[in-house]
Length: 75
Image (cartoon, rainbow, N blue to C red):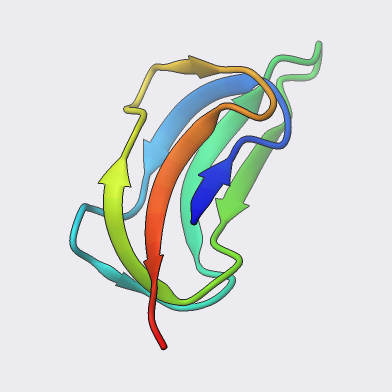
C-alpha cells in the first residue's frame, strides 16, 4: 500500500524508518502546507504493517497525490 499526500506541502519531519512496524492510524510524518497560513498537518497510515520504503525526505516539496511511504500490510 502506498501512502500519498492529501495536500501539497513541504516535508518537515519523517517519524518512521524503513523496516519499522506501524499501527493503523499511526503518524508517519509532518508536512507544512503550501497555503498562505503554512498550516502543518500529519500524515497517518491507514493500515497496520511494516514501512517498506520511504519515498521522500525532510525538506522535499510534495504535491497532492504524490507517493510518500510504502507500507507492507500485516495480516
